[in-house]
Amino acid sequence: MKKTALAIVTALLLSVSSACFAQWPVFDAANYSQNLLTAARELQQIDNQIQQLQNEATMLVNQGRNLTSLNFNSLSQLLSTLATTNQLISQAQGLTFNVAQSQATFNRLYPPSYGAGTSNAQMVQDAQTRWQTSVQALQTSTQMQSQAAQNLLSDQGVLSSLVTQSQGAVGALQASQATNQLLALIARQAIQSQQLTVSQQRATALDQARAAADEAQAQQVRTRFIGSGPQYTPQSVSFYGN
Image (cartoon, rainbow, N blue to C red; front, side):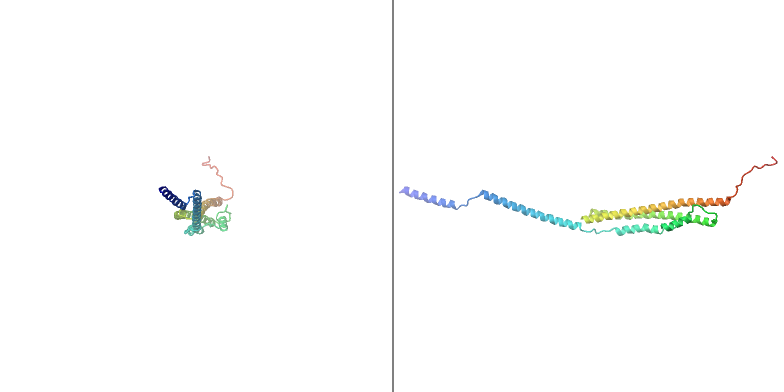
């Protein structure tokens, strides 16, 4: 009787245990790994899309900077500085820088020779005019040198501002505009250098021409003083019959 009861209890326990184990879920390691890999790939794609959006946003910001104009313009100051030397040239006295006028004046004041019919008063007047013309040319050259020195001080301020603007440029457009203005400054200085050279060479040429014209005038004066006839020939003189 006892054996029969024990067998029944054992059977009941086994049946309950089997039912409980049957209710536990079965873990599929392969499926879990596949799902984890898929989730990781999707997360990586999301990260890539976010990075792409960030890159596009950065590109748009840079493009906006490249299109930003430089809020600085030195052209008016450069033109104003150049106008100072242009004014000195336009105000030059004596032999002007106009080609036709200067050629006519030069031919009149600096003849290669003076004819016999030229009066002494005319030659004296021409000599005085030549001297005044040389002095005026030297004065213009000196004024040009002084003005050029003042302009260099102004250029230093412009150069400093342009370098600051170039270093602080936020985009290609600002950097390009700053570079263009630096080139304009160099061009202005080159023009001023040419103007200075022209004024100096003009003064030198007029002084040399004055010397040549004065020599031609002196030759005519000597000819009038001595004459064109036979020259005096010294002869020996005897004293006391010797």
